[in-house]
Image (tube, rainbow, N blue to C red; front, side, top):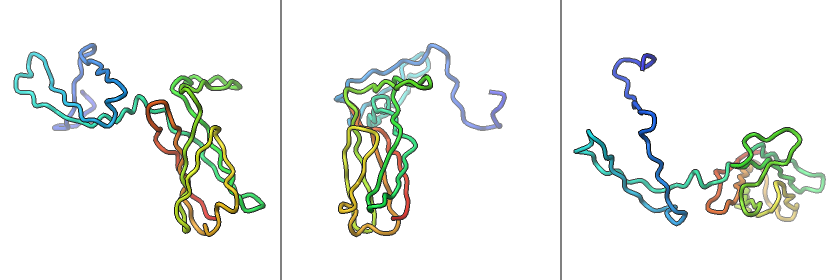
Length: 159
């Protein structure tokens, strides 16, 4: 508390006082209402939030890069991450943490939106699929998890 400025709001949390709220997967996207219960919470107001399921989502891919190929195609690659692989020793394969490896991506540009799916952390988009795409494009890739999609990895470049 000593590092806070005068009148700055803060929350004092007593170790061991927080309770984990475990919800089933079907609660994703639904509203949940909670009310504080404790000695000084007689007038506590209920608070509702939509369950976003962040703990159920795989981490977003990282290091998304795109490179134009000589034939006009676009090679995309990224590094997958996992809830089970935080230690990730050098030279070892990271555990997946999902029942299958799957990615969904979008490429937005001058000719509209192109979507793709792949089962590995890379894809080559053929030149024919990029027909009419010129100028700046935005690429985003999510990992499709067992219960939800990750936050997207994004990059942009010029075709």
